[in-house]
Image (cartoon, rainbow, N blue to C red; front, side, top):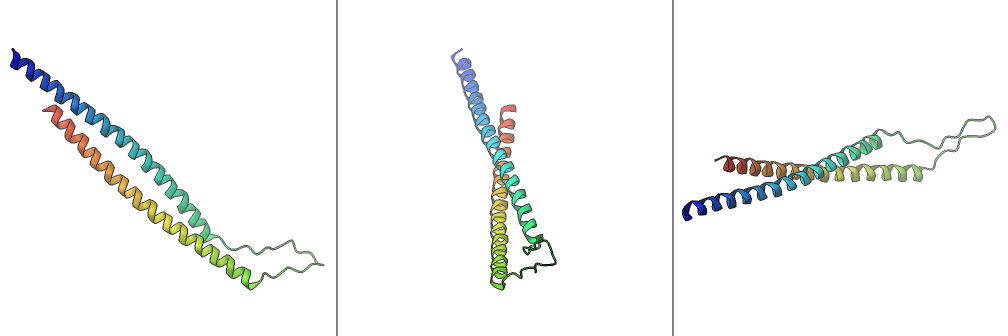
Length: 127
């Protein structure tokens, strides 16, 4: 009788421990999925900003043409400064995109590890 009771107690202890591990893993998986989605959205937004920056043709401050006024010609230094600022923004976007992509890959790897652990726990509890 004692042996049967002890076996049942051990079974429920192992089962409750597996259930607790499963809850923790599912909680971690949920957190990682949310962070992964957020990272992907940030990536898409930055990608669009970079794409717009690259395709944006610099606008010269053109004012409406009127016969009595001439169009001001921008200074070379100002154009060069705008060009350098644009290149710096593109470089910054590229760096941030690379970082977000790396983080997204890390999160996907973590997610796959957790899914493997969940599957392993599911197989143990079925046995």
